[in-house]
Amino acid sequence: MILTPEQQAMLDGSKGEVMAKIVKTLVMYGDTFGAERMVPVTSKYGHTVISYGLKVLGPVLDVFDEIIDAGLTDGQKFTADPRPLDKNVPSNLLEDLVFKKIMYTDQARYEAQMEKLGILNDNAYSCTCYLDQVGNKPGKGEILSWAESSAVVYANSVLGARCNRNSGMLELFGSIAGFVPEFGFLTDEGRKADWVIEVKCEKKPEAQLLGSAIGMKVMEDVPYVKGLDKWLGNELNDDACAYLKDFGAATASNGAVGLYHIDGLTPEAKELGETLIREGAQVYVIDDAELERVKANYPVIWADKEARPELCFVGCPHLTLKQLCDWTDAIDRKLEENKLKKVSVPTVFTASPAVIAEFNKTDKANILKRSGVIVSYICALMYMNNPLCKKKAVITCSNKLRTYTSARYYTEGEILNIITSKEAKA
Image (cartoon, rainbow, N blue to C red; front, side):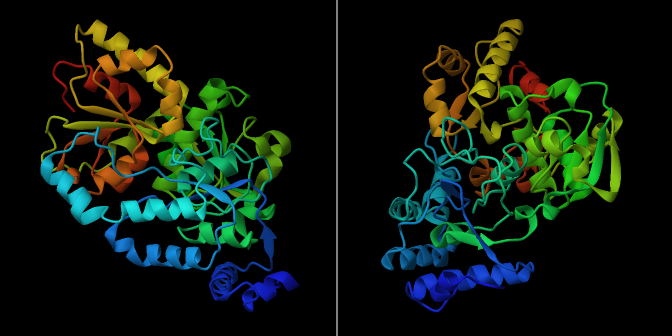
């Protein structure tokens, strides 16, 4: 790798031993993927995937202390993934003990470190950092040093920014150093599509299900998706962006997609069209039957497959303000139709603290509260990592949560019917 004189000096220790280690790590990372040079990080803010003080992450927190002690705290401000704990989310005494005494024992230490390292503010914990309310929305072509698969794929695809699927720590190193190795999605060639996806459904495909099917098929490759215009149109409005948020999260977690193009909709597809498709790209046709096949093959790993749902999570990734409002309206209608006052399954909607604050200003907040739904800022995945919680019969419409935990997947319509039904059967 060819470094600039300034970068070489940093590697040689001009800014201290800790910065030299950071640059050496970035060089090794770039060498692994054949990068020939570093490029400046041009976004205003970074984003880190590490948002929890797990006991086993002690060595990571020690590295954070090294960075702080070395005075390397004047790099990018950043946002972080959601916090893992919220007293308002249902849990029993034993589960709480595991959370606080075994799992997230270093949460206070971690959050104090984040404040010193430059987290944007106390409300900057969300996997949907790019939403307007959160304030970390990069522009087209900007170079990022982010981690969090669902945020990276959204930034690359919907915003047209440029970021590789970095791991935890590497994203912070890039923000501190101010540069990242140039390879993959940071290059024009790396952003070309390896697959053409032809969507031939008769009804609007469920975002999380369509993303899952594509992710499992293309894995880490780049898909160019045709046929969604009849439902999403050609403008990135609130509904289209919310759909693509959930779609992208499923492609990234059920596969390893870091970038997709939607014909006539996402920035690069609108600008460059089918010139983004590589010669010899493979084709995958998706119709309603294919989506049903994919859904039918999801494993159910509950001990009792016929168990009554004990908990429902909606919002992985975090919900947008419009999604919170739309869900509130749908639940209110269904409860009235079924002559119920509250949801029949304990239900948690997750969203960023900033989105929740805006939602609480609307008249819909009291309607949702009366329905019995809890609105929380936590990461549902971090909740489900508790070995006691993973034994619960948890349902979700998130394919990311299904993939990483024991939660059982249902479409949004199915979730709505289950939680507003007197029987509440899965």
